[in-house]
Image (cartoon, rainbow, N blue to C red; front, side, top):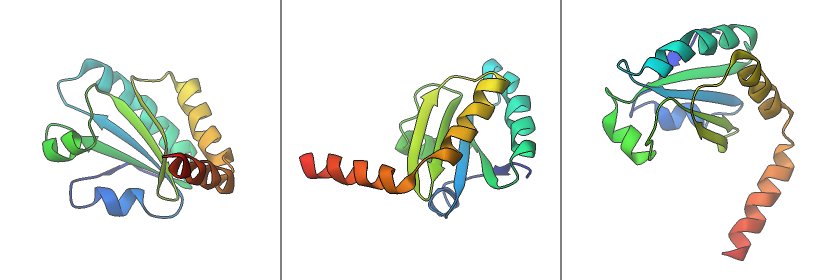
Length: 122
């Protein structure tokens, strides 16, 4: 699947949909972002069942601020509307492929149970 661009208007709808969404927060002036772009595109072609989205932090500054993105690239992974991964920094191709596989392998019932337990403790 080709990557899609997300904006302030489409971000929430995209990441709360069923399934897996991987978001790459980037900017045109960012060297590591440009280097990671080819890895992001290549891995997106290997996982047609996953939505790969690009968030241009320069064009979507309010959204980037709301997401508290302080370093780019920042990768976020959502599954069934739940953020299950967030980390700044580009990943090498093998590590990024592994991340996608790990998100696919998550037991979402267990994830929801852990979130409920955390909320109960607050």
